[in-house]
Image (cartoon, rainbow, N blue to C red; front, side):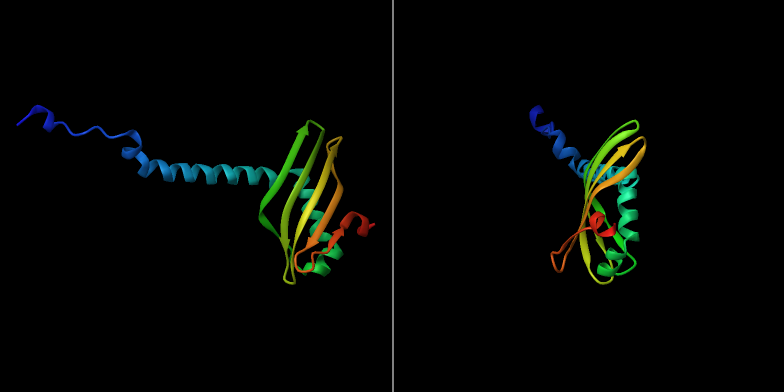
Length: 135
């Protein structure tokens, strides 16, 4: 018997460890996504937007009640002490229909205020400017 035959061939790190590395990578991505969504949903900009949506008579008429927001949010939030700005895009739904919300929010002196709030009804593609129609 030759000494070289007794040594098993060396395998790569990936072939030895992929079984635990892939699930860990997926779990890490889910955790990061959850953390980012939590930050968005706990922001003042999101809270002002969703509060206005849920209390709007126009939205209640179009979608019905209760109004539920989607899990996912797209957008950006920038803050610097007492000032900031945010642009948000997310879905809402009610018993009658669902819609997409687009908002622009500005923070001044620590207070978030909506500057743009639009609801696009899914079934009719109608766009409703909620700030214009609520006044």
